[in-house]
Length: 406
Length: 85
Image (cartoon, rainbow over all chains, first blue to last red; front, side, top):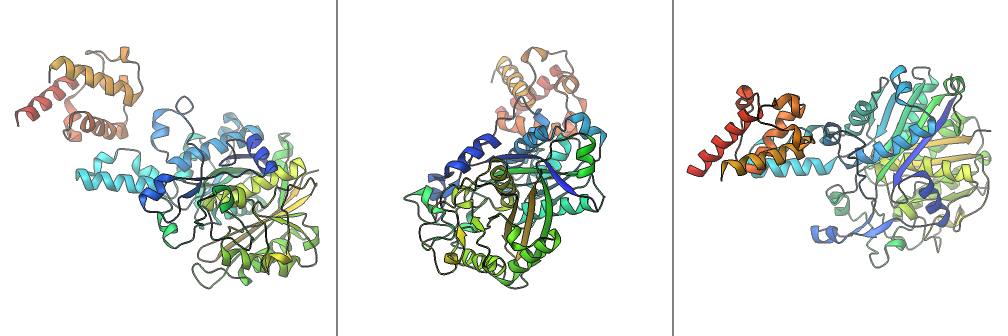
């Protein structure tokens, strides 16, 4: 079995458009949440959202490439450029090796809605233009990045609701561990536009604390009233230890455990038992004990039921260890398909720079979160191993464990 | 619409849509080579014409068009037809 290391990370999120900016936001506990008046006018119950501007790619990519890309592919292009540069993987390297690509993405609503509007109005499918079909598929991020970077390895998208990005990294880990791939570009991407989240808003999943957007996402807090949608993209480059050593790459960390499970129950109601099995499997796979984990980046999205279930699952596995826990979603909101990948990037930044980002807006515990050691203010503390949870609709669960490379 | 105006408008949207320098568009130049059109680009040409002149093009209409002058002639004829309706 190959050991699997991380040699590059990249991020484009509401906390910043690159690693340096995001590291500062994490350290300062800065929120990326805004109130978008367009959503209210459109009929949303909540106008809150994480926000990041679309990148200007003219001059970076030719017209044909840009025509094929919905916004989440643009975000993913930016985060992947940054990760590849960090990994020192240039185009010659990508051309000479079979590098894979596994990205989490579970919607592409805006191009679908816009194309349908055109067809309805003009009664002519051709008027949607040539880029539409490539923008509308769930695999759009993969098809765009694989073409732009001329990748030749495994190439498919992972669609697992809010655990998509985490499972993408887990699968990349398995491909490299088994020896089937030497390097895989993994990640997650999430569109932010108002077409993407209307039906999510419909089920009253979102916080309506619109009077103070920065306070709206409050994972584990007693007075939380729902999640805040968000988006962007994150990239994590996985490589076999042998490949990384052979080319003298800087190794940032090692993925040592991947756990997964399915609740086998309700489509949206969370469970304690499902996530507990995912956590336990990741620990078993890593061959470590709960006390060895230095930091837990929780999935906690600021929904009443979800956070309580996760708190119970964490407590059932880590009770007695007093492991520091924070959900960075207090700052970012819920980055959905991207979150499992972005939270690996956020945790990697913390581990590299010796701090734990705060779970902002955690002011009062409830009976479940009171049993956890939740980080409320930035903690200057080194840690060597972290665990990151991601859970999604349909009861899909994913847990990843990463160790610092020393 | 005057012929000169149609040609100016055509040149402007072609240069913008296909990101080529306006100077590269001359009546004698080849449309496909100058704009670097592949099969997908013809779809976007159909969209651009609809957006700018309001008429629908069938892809087979492009078969006889080689130069920009051929393209102007085609667009002028369709615009004039539309104006007569």
